[in-house]
Image (cartoon, rainbow, N blue to C red; front, side):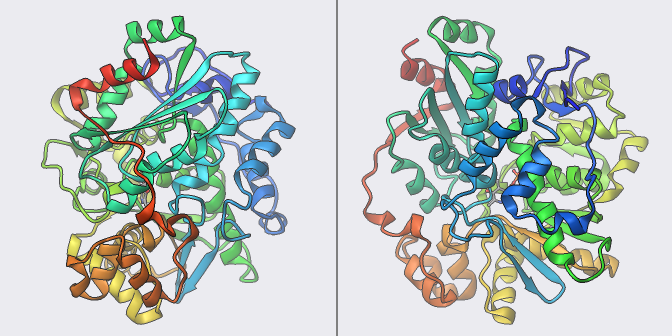
Length: 493
Ligand SMILES: *Cc1c(COP(=O)(O)O)cnc(C)c1O
């Protein structure tokens, strides 16, 4: 059966997966959603026999029908290969009732790799399918991890260029170093003097500028997005929830429900968990964990989404976000798929910086539990897990773990839980080592990689080995209002 996609903001035409992936965002500014949710139509026992690649093919082919099964198989094989340092792709580590789903074994050591090692291949396939001959320009705002994962995915991919904006001072030194040392003639990295929301807003403004798009078109370019609003990123993320569930439930009698805790920023990862539940995966609560930029915590608990507040830089920078783009897809569901409601909420958010959902929509939120962790709680989470299990988690995962503990305290519900471990602890050496022993907080971040290796008994992950000595290739900085000018200059418009 062919799957079609429609925009959250309009009654406009339904499109196949190729154009949806290629454009990233719908022409009306909305996000593409599948018109219906396919279900897991094979038994869990049967699915448990599949390896990661085969399970990916089973799930993704239900959504990206027009790419065809063979092309999709190639995209998957190209994505999940020896770039991952663990042959299972997503190892699941059990600690008592908690299972850490390690999503950080890809080339940039964060969960973004799970989708971004595949997206370039999906985009090329989509371009071929729609007979697009233009050069694809990927424009991306990053809070640290997306940028590097996208650069790594697209570097050297023919027919593409990638431009990444990141907030100066808003990412860890390792993250910054990973991006500024990126090789590849088709890669561009720019620091902006602003925060992630500024970067995201700037990129959105460039995307929706019709005049700019016309100029691009004349020059033979087409924009696409590697941000998590692209449906080509969202769908591959469903796979690991199913995969981890199958690993957990093996032998314990299938069908038992689990809880899932996800450290959340742009709401992409947890939305994929929600989609897995809609597909029929036995999941009870979705625990949405925020850091002190806790807009989502407030929203889930009050129905009021309010971005009028101070933006705080934390030790979990990938979650320092006040406007969670992917929430729009959940809102669309909660509103009974009524685009009028979405348009109203989006207008309120843009004009007043806040919106309120009605009682009926709030009822739909009961699948979710919203919590947040302070900086101290995040450190305590790292130390607590290390002291108890000798297992090292990163700051983002620690936010997920802390909020999960609050959830158990609040509800007494201690059924088996999956925690999305979204980054390697080696990506955030100062915060992680500092949580174990305060004396490290004043030390140089790059130098602490060795310390972490000693503490954890693990080798420094291959992608970070020798990073301190790599040549810095990208040195450009610009103000928020110059982002469009920079893109023009790069593309020679
Ligand atoms: C991006 C990111 C998150 C947040 O994921 P969203 O899909 O934006 O909610 C959490 N942790 C890490 C390490 C990330 O890179």
